Image 1: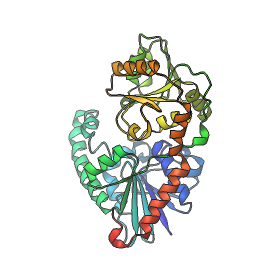
Image 2: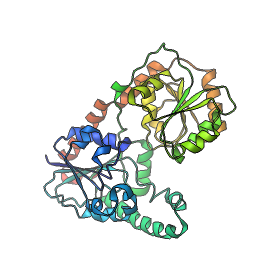
Image 3: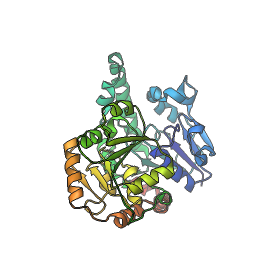
Length: 369
């Protein structure tokens, strides 16, 4: 079986790229296509693969300013010659699934999210642009929505990374999707149930929607300690206003991050994420999660067993959740570790391969789901 795998852009190793790495491991001879490539930013396993770029990569400063060309990406995908492939897999969060597949070629999309900047968050993105650029962005986003919807109708089967994303797929693409949550490398983490745990933890890129600002405010004026792990454009501003009990550790190597998870009383997770690998990483280390109860955490965290939810993105709601957690704190490590095991690599690969096998075996009248 000749396989092609498409991913929107390959310029770093975030959640989408880690999932791509797992999918590509199932098909070691597959050709990988992307709009823009920076091998130096990829894992050794991905960097060693046969990766081909679309015409976007040949545009000026594409590796750095690729998002400026997103309006041209659907056309670049449609110009790819996909003849000869038996199966085309799209890893979708930006434009990736818009290829024109030849008759008889099966197509599957693993969707991290329909593009937020052209659907539900288009006005948020527009507001961040200079005023003269906003009408241009809205025009391009409108064209992109039409292209994105049309591309979604051509796919035989869609898999969503969470129930939350499955609902967005239903709303914006009018398609049903099977849910298969992203995997984590369980071997990176370990839990010592009787080890002492002190302080709380926040792990994320420090960008606006991750809501580290809520954590800083929630811990201000208290005796609770929290360590913020990660870096990004919000860090300098947050550090200027943070009290001494809020410590910024920056990005940590994998071993140090695992140790930080293992030493924390709980992870604070105030963002609304499509899925969110960080809560699963914390649970793999035996650490419960105190999370905003919307988005992908509904598929991973079990309230009362592996953590608890708060219902508003506010410092007051986080403080109230911490009070509830401390009033009823019980040993969580075993339950957290058992829950995280459901998101291991073997489980993901087995279910993904089963979905592909079912697609390839289905008669033409039953391929599209």
